Image (cartoon, rainbow, N blue to C red; front, side, top):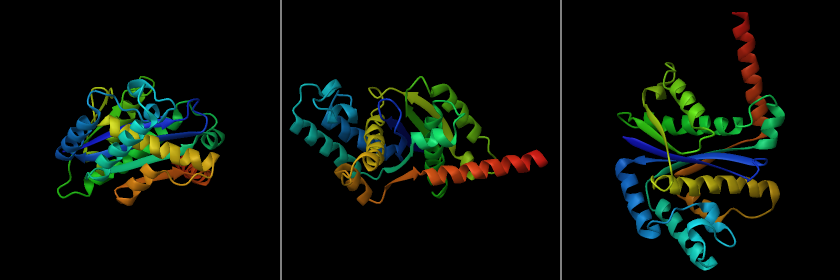
Amino acid sequence: MLEVYADESHDEKQESVFAVSGLLGTEREWDDVEGRWKAVFGDLTFHAADIESDPPRGDFEGKSRQECIELMHQAVDILVDSRILGFGCCLDIRDFREIYPGDRMDAPYYFCFQNALLELAEVSTQIIPPEIVNFTFDRNRDYCHNATILFDKFTKVGEWPSSLTLGKISFADKQLEKGLQPADLFAREVFKHRYNQLTSNRPLRIPLRRLADTKRFRLQFWSKGDLLELKDVILEHLRKTDKQ
């Protein structure tokens, strides 16, 4: 059995970059990660945005900047030393809204959710024999209902081999599901990488560089050109459907 823990990350006003990222591993691999995570953070609930805030917020309020840097370093160590795989999808929200102006305000989430789901599900078919993969996403009431409907539709796509390995989808709180906390870290790194590309000339962040160096973590950025190309494909498909 494979388990995916996933989370989203974006700027505060959801005007710049949106990302959804997931981490995949076996139950044994997750037991190891969660045990080490508990040893470092105890009952603290990890939020990358809180630990990097100046001053630190949430459960890290009152800790020094150096303490938070060291905790972040240890968190990345846990993922680097594991066998967990990661995939992150992100897009520029302004480009998305320009190309798909009629879409819902929450469409960037579902677009990234779908891409992360498809990529991580494909991994399950590359194992012999293929293994069922369950998904646990961070609970966000704005997305849970429609995300579940979308997930169920993918389980019924007969011509897509990965539909046979999709198990179940669930939504949980970070305080209760420790696997969502490292997922939060990776989602934040994917978001920050693209955000920094758009707003500054900062070098690749050290946590993301360390994760990328393992060759087990990758990300997909949907550029404006990619989104336009996809729109053309969709329109062509609709034209062919109308003629039938």
